[in-house]
Amino acid sequence: NNPPWPAYRGYHEYSFAHATMHSRLPTILGKAIEDATRTLNEESLEERVVDLAQCIDRMEELMADLSGNAKLRPIVDDGEADVITWNKEITKFFRALDPGKDFMSAPWLFAEAYKYRRLRECFSVSKFWNTYDVFYRQKNDTFSRSSEAVFELAMRFAEPGLISKTTHPNQKELDAQRLIFLELTQVCLWGNSTDLSLLINMTEDQIRSLQSTGGEHLAATEQNILGNDMERIWETVKSIRETKADHRRIDFVLDNAGFELYCDFIYADFLIQSGLATEIRFHGKRYPWFVSDVTKKDWDWLINNMCYGHLFPEASPAEMQALRLLAQRWKQYERDGKWIYEQHPFWCTGYTYWDLHSEAPDLFFHLSHSDLVLFKGDLNHRKLTYDCAAPASTPFEEAIGPMASASGAPKIVSLRTVKSDVVVGLGPNGNEIAKRLDDQEPGWKISGKYAVVLLSEGRPG
Ligand code: F6P
Ligand code: MG
Image (cartoon, rainbow, N blue to C red):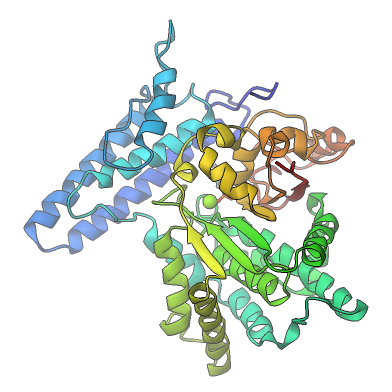
């Protein structure tokens, strides 16, 4: 049940695995400790102060384990729904003659996810700080720093008139819908390039240039989509609308909070208004994950802030009104059950999605009822593809294994800006394309400049 290529590991010095395990993760954890310390210094009640200080002690222990490349120990039973799943996998490392895996020798994906699970444990065993999110401040910041793109989209899409509501559009309406679909697919895609874990030190100007959403800019960035199934995806959603009269469900397996989630919402709003979907299910994380991933609190924060907040003192009344209009419509979708937030424990484990059907059969069954599942971002792409050294010419459906071939596999789209080693789905000349980029643009796999938009047709159950 495994692919024929080796999974990346921290000791692979040629890969981003090494830089991540060796320096990025300690830096991220260091910032998390700074955040908790700031909160500690603001707290007044003794029992809360003592409790938080203990959380910080546990974070320091984790830092020592990470920097000292300790063996991965089992997760403490903290009542989370995923403890058994985590420990089942960790125990496997200690089998037979194997003395156990450490942060560098375990598969990169697993070891990196394990770090976030251990971070969760620092807080989950506490009395007062169980729900504390060490990344919350940073997540909110990215949205407020993205004002230009936020209002450009709000001013265009707040008024629903732009999108023809009929589910049986004439050719002209269909052509217009196709163009908006392709544009917003790109907006949703590139929203992923601003995630916090990589771009922590960006200037406002750099963020602005990454996020500009104008037509010309999108035409230029389309050239950076190295594997591009967007037209096929349009044909797919169109045919779902033509063939399914009553109920059309699209799922988003979310990635990052703030600006990326806002772009996801703009896209999902269009899918509902155009009748391409009647229901959207969003899958988020149960606790802080890979710095910027969406939790329910981030979801609520975004919509409520758009509705009632004062985050953009420079914005004009018309711009604020547009933002509010969007948020009110989105709240209504939630009330009507058209938008549904879910958080299955499997999303916060170290498994790749090659194991989804066997380790979380209920979730696989649930997803198999979707008409299309959109996976956002780099980590989801790594999980889909087993995070292994597959050649760039490997077809996407081969690279995702059981997620394409198991009975009941849904149609799947990966919308991913390339931020790590695994790259597949570039077509028959993929290996040459990757080789040329390796030669001409070292670092192209972690810059977020390139992307893939790949479709798997699924396999009816
Ligand atoms: O730390 C590595 C990583 O998992 C990369 O894959 C990527 O740089 C980042 O973290 C997460 O990116 P995303 O938010 O797009 O999944
Ligand atoms: Mg993320």
